[in-house]
Length: 311
Ligand SMILES: Nc1nc2c(ncn2[C@@H]2O[C@H](COP(=O)(O)OP(=O)(O)O)[C@@H](O)[C@H]2O)c(=O)[nH]1
Ligand SMILES: [Mg+2]
Image (cartoon, rainbow, N blue to C red; front, side):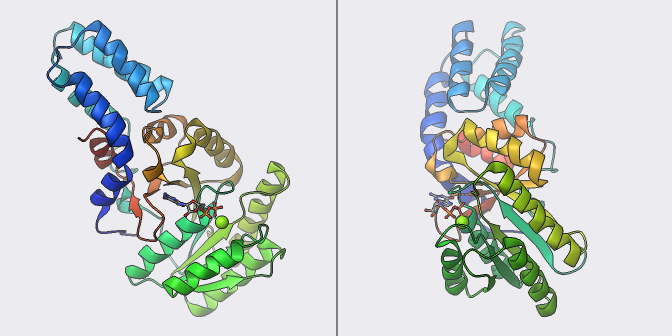
């Protein structure tokens, strides 16, 4: 699906805090300076502080040291360019780019299941995706399958009302798989282009949550061939390395196909996206850059790295 017009601006906005810290630090550290072994050590420390992960930081700096020792890179400016280039190179060309943002099923509806722990931004992210799709002229149906938390259905209903997008819900405490079942029926009957399924983030135990997600997946698969076509894991960028931990857990148990990195605007450690890239085979597809439904952008590694180190 071809998402969002102002992608670069949105990523820049989302990375404003990161750029203020990471970008500003690296600029003052490197611009106008001559590279040295000590400076290279300092670069490693700051990369780790930006949350890119120890492994990525070490590899980047080893590469830079080699260039320095062979004399290819000697000025701070060139070191900064080297870092940007090497970071960008950690993403496969195009494969992860936002151009593809979300998978499209060969027949309607495309089913997108949204998962993640409590409070990371699932429901808000569902609203963002719904709005983007609607703005593109697609018909969307929302399924409120978080029947666990009091107020969760009401929250999605409020978005449904504000965005003018239909919703299927069950009563509080209803079986979420039953809601998914009804929603799949409704999406088929109406010929909706996309069915977006919001889920609960917390059940009594983690096993419980994973079992429930499996049940929802099975119900959707029975009704609609190939569904869910996309399982988006929402991660909270402000939770740092915790997010990486959650990603590992869900990727193993919930068949995650993509990551929605929410609250990028709330952190100065946007480098977390590098750590996620290193640790997981799952691509970051979308980023959340604020609380409004339009605060979303497709992830694009080149733009992201540029914005991260921008002034
Ligand atoms: N700043 C900011 N806040 C966000 C973003 N996404 C979600 N939130 C806020 O995070 C809080 C939890 O979001 P919610 O969608 O209810 O999370 P859920 O429990 O996973 O469904 C709400 O106050 C949202 O407004 C984002 O990209 N940026
Ligand atoms: Mg929610």
